[in-house]
Image (cartoon, rainbow, N blue to C red; front, side, top):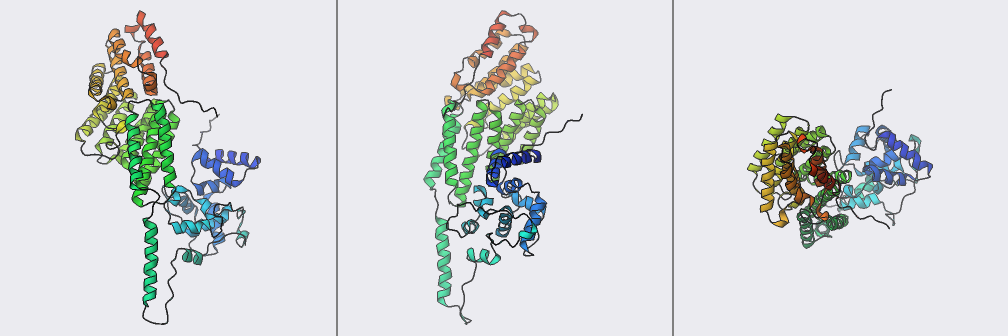
Length: 517
C-alpha cells in the first residue's frame, strides 16, 4: 500500500480536522481563528478564510457578489496576495478589507494584526475600527454565506464616500469666486500643521532606544561566557518590552530600530534554546527573527538565521537540507564577508557529512578567503557582537569539525589547535565556552584517530570539568560523538575507556526551571 505523504504544518487536512473539532465543541469562528494563528502562525485574513473552510476563489466570488460592480473584480490569486501582505503579496485597500469583513461577518479591524497596522496610516486604522464608540467590542455579525446576502442591512459597509471623507481628502468648499480666500488657504495650512504635529509624536524616546540596544548588546555578549539560565529570562523580558513599544506610535526610523532589536532578541532566544537542547524552539525563534529582518530588509540577520537553520538541520542528521539552507543564505550575503564566512563554513561541514571531500574543502577555502577580506563594521555581527561575532576562532572551530568528519586527523588537529589558542589568548568575556569546548573535542578526536588515547583524554579533561551552568547541548552532542569514536581499534580493551565512557554518559546540561503554577 502506498504511503500518504504527510503535508506541511497547517495543511488542509489538519485545518479541517481542527475546524470540525472546535465546531463540535461549540467554539466560535473567532476562537477557531485564534487557535489557527497560535498553532500555525497564519496571517489574520488567511485564518478567517480557513475558519470558514473557504477557498481563495470562494472568498473572491463572495466579495464580487457584494461589490455590485464597484471596483475591479477580485480573483483567488488576488485574495492570496492580500493575505500575505505585508510579508509579501499586495497591500489590501480599505474597500477590499470592508468586503472581506462582510464575507466573514467581522469588523474590518479584525482582519488585521499589529504587523499590518504598523504599515497603515492612523486614519485608515480609525476607519477600519468603524464609527462605534466601542472599537474593541466584537461585532457579533454573521458572515455572508451566499450571493443573496449582499443587501444585508446589519453589516457595516464602508462606501467609497466614507473612505474619502474619513481620510480628510474632501476639499474645502470654495466660494463662487475665482480667487481662493486667505481663510481657505490658512485652513489647509493649519490642517497640515496639525497632522505634522501628530506625526512628530512618539511613544518612545531616543534614550529608551539606546537603553534597549545596550541591553540587547549586553545579553549577546553575556551569552558567550555566562550562565544562560538567568540570561534567558532577561531576553524574554527585553523582547516583551520591545513588543509593547511596537504597539504604539513612533517615527519610521524608530520602528526600524525596534524591529531590528526584536529580530536580534529572537536570534538570542534561538541560541539559548539550542543551548538547552530545544532545537524546535530554536528553529521557531529564527523564523520570527527572519520575519522582522524581512520587514526592515536586514540581510545580515537573515543570513545568520539561514546559517543557524543549516546548523539545526545538520544536527538533526539532515546534511542535504543543511547544504541547501547554507546556499540559500549565500544568495542573500552580497558583499557581506562575515555572512559568507559563516555560511561557507556551515556548507563545508554539511558537505563533509555527505562525504563530499572536494566540495567541503572548497567551501572551507571560500570561508577562509571571506575572513581575509572582512573589513568595516556591521551593526549586527560587530556592533551587537557577542555570540554573533564572526571571529577567526569560530571559523577554525567550524573547519576543524568538518575536517574530522572527512577523516583528516592532522589537518583537523591544526585547525582545532588554532581555534583553542585564539580563545585562550582572548579576554575571558570574549571566550565562547561552548565553541572552545567543541574545538577541544575535535582535537581529542584527532588524537584518538592517530592512536594516542592518553593525549585524547587530556584534551577532554577541561570539557568534562566545565561548570554545569555553562554546559550546552552542543558540548554534550560532540562528547557523544567522541564516545562513538572510542570504538576505534586503538581504544578497544584499554582499561581507561570504560571510565571515560561513564564520564561522558554522566555529562549533563542545565535545564530551564519547571513552571509549577
